[in-house]
Structure formats: structure tokens, C-alpha cells
Image 1: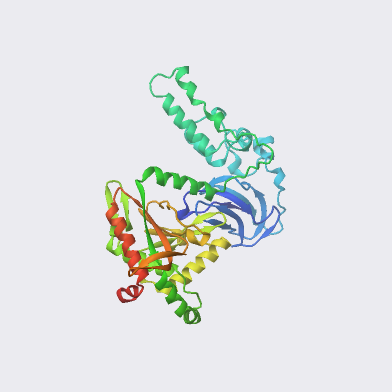
Image 2: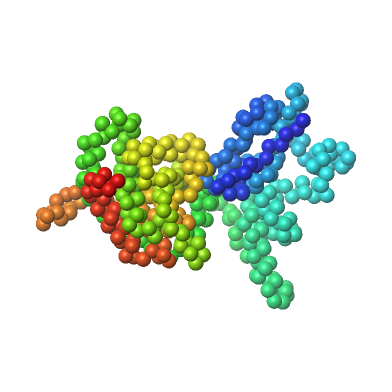
Length: 420
């Protein structure tokens, strides 16, 4: 009996994915529950497991193809000892009489025509074209070898809607052909073309959307790190022995951010149409630079976490980010984000919002600088902080007061202990 491998419910990752890599080859023996193929989503990689014992009979979607929930990725022959069909025989049904195409699901209208489209258009783009009754031949492809992508179909729809407004004269439809400009240009000597991963494409899209949809401003302050660094120096060994993890800077800033958010609740909110959703919980996202792009795992109810729990969670997130084992639940939601460019040497930056959040705190490298203390110039370890915020609901006063409160809590960390 044949069992289909289908794209599962992707939950928070959305409805679409890209086939990353197959973990099994055609003809390989597979056990039920064993991972067979990896899908790349906007947030994490998802392993799809077999639902039955058998052998991988054929692969329906190759690496790099876009897929949606419910699409068939491959087929497992569940009968013991069944001989798998070679992958190269996959297109054969299109050349055979209809009555010889054994699987019932192959008996669609004009299967040969459908097969001819494969390689010219991605599955997601094909589905969109079919739903809107669009002739694929009329869509200019911008992918490799002129392959039609989802973006090409969306552009075609947009151009068609514009040309349909008023009289549909040939002159009106003429501007609907700017697509050749988006064709991949020919490479010159010393150049290399590298395909963007789905995650990188999503990061790029979301960053542009954040700048286009929010009235984003950034305000700055600096903080004297002397007290925190001396505290860490005194307590780091006993902290590690007791909790098995180092006492880093992250836990101090997470705690300080929560304290400041309690005083400035609009920075922990979300815009929903003409309404403001105030969130009386503190799920703090911590940006981590992964190899394939930035990920932001979330500390749930960070206000209830101890320093050790925060440090342990961040250490786990960093390891899982490197291993590619972060779960969708790790990345879901978040009310406020902290990003630390200082670990890469950044002195000052303007972080971009992580929608639908309305504020993000950027940390930077610590460096010795002259500072005035009690009327004297002394050298202190200083850090610049940056707060980007959505000016639609957060005014400069609240943003500045937030940073001032974070500065107070970091420069006098005993307040964090006294006020919890």
C-alpha cells in the first residue's frame, strides 16, 4: 500500500515552505516516524517524518521547490519487499494511455499538459495561477532559466488589475511588461549568483515592511557598566558552580527592560487597526545571529524568571540556533525584543522593529571612555543603548523615560533585587 508524504500543518511558520533537502534517496528503507525530508519555513526548518514503514518509491517535490500545506512531497511503498519505482520514471504516466496510469489521483484532465509546466513554474505560483485562471504562458518568469515564481504571478495580477481599470486598450496594457527588467542579469567575471534562502527572503521582506508600515524613530542613551561588571566579577564563579551557567549581561538587561516596560506599558503593546492592545505579560525576544539569518527566540514570562533561568534559556537558544533545532514554539509571539550588536563589535546602531511589536532595545559593545563622576573625569566602561519605537503610539517622552529607567537599573543593579 502506498502512503503519501505530505506537507504538515506548519503552525506559526505559515502556510508555505521550500523543500530544503531530502534525507532519504529513492529506494531507501524507511521506518515509521523517521525523518525523510526537511522543509525550510520563514522561521525554522521542519523535519517531515514517515507515517509508515516501507521504501521511498518516488519524490514528487525536489529541493528548492515551493510547497504548501497538504502538497504531496513523495510516496512510500508500504508493502514489504515492494520494488520502488526509479525516480527517473516519474513523468512516464504522461506518455502512457490514461487507463494505464494506475494511481487514481493521476486521472486529472490533461495530465500531460500539467507535466509540461513542471520546471517552468513553482508549485505555489502554479496554484495561484490556477485559482485566478491565469495563462502561465502570459506570465514573465524571473527565476532561474525564466522560471515563474509566486512574485511573478502576483506582479502579473497587479498589472492586469491596473490595465483593467477603465478602457482596456492595447496602449493601456503596454506598461504591463516591465518584467524583463527583473530578469536575472548575466554575470561578469569574478561574480557568483547565490540563491537566497526562504528565511533570508522573509527577513528582507519583513524589514522592509517594518520601515514602510511604522513611524519608526530611534533614541539613544549611554550606560555606565561599572556596577554590573564588578558584580559579575565577584559572583561569576559561585554562580557557575551553583547553576552550571555563566552570569552574563543578558539577564541584567532582560530584567531592566521588564522593569522599564512596567513603567512604560505602551512599549509593550501592539497596534490593531485603530486600537492599542496593551499586554500585561512580558515575553521578551532575544535576537540571535544564526548562520541562515537572524532568529528571535522568546523568553516566556521573563518577569517571573530568575537570572539563572534567563541565562540558561539564552544559552540553549544559541545552541539550538547553531544546530537548527529551534522549535516554532520557541519563536512564537514576543512582546518586546532585545538585540545585542555589541557581541560583533558594533559601537552604535539603529535596530529595526520586529512587527507587530512597537519597540526594540539595541545594545552595543562596552568600551572604556572618559566620564564625569562627582566633578572628576574618570575612565569607565560605557555602552551606548538605542531604542527604536513606533511613533504612532509611543511618544519621545515615553521612549526617553524607558531608556533612563534601564540606565538607572543597570547602573544600580541592587534595585533589580530590591524591586524584583
